[in-house]
Length: 156
Image 1 (tube, rainbow, N blue to C red):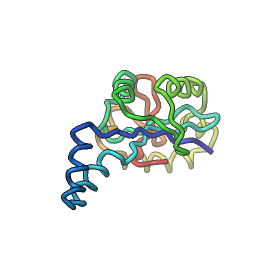
Image 2: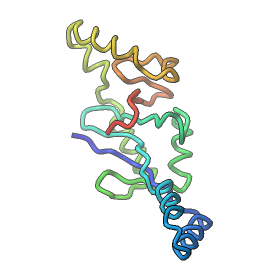
Image 3: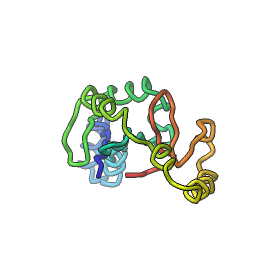
Image 4: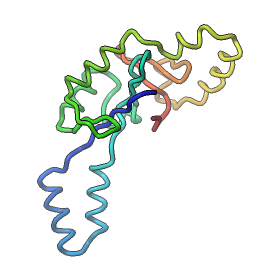
């Protein structure tokens, strides 16, 4: 069992004012669009006991696939929380990631299994999105800047 971590982007003053203005003018669709865009949680990744932290690439929409860019994103005013809604600081987040650095990954896990597993994943790896091929993914994961990323999008 693991714990998923999310970033929530708070509304800017201008966005708050636009939501209030939209509600007052009974333009609920505009208010909903602004709120949906900002309040939908952004999946950062998953911490599972015994495994290295697994980052979500988010199709590189919010950050580049390196520690500096992810750190900049989580320090940009987003609210970090786990799936139960508990808020954590960026420092606490990186402590969690660091505590799992010696855990397993898919490669070490599946290396103990026979070639049938390898054949199945080789076929699946061929379906990995093009932009991740440069990282030489295997078993639906890859490393960039020492961080483990999933090639699956919207995993939890």
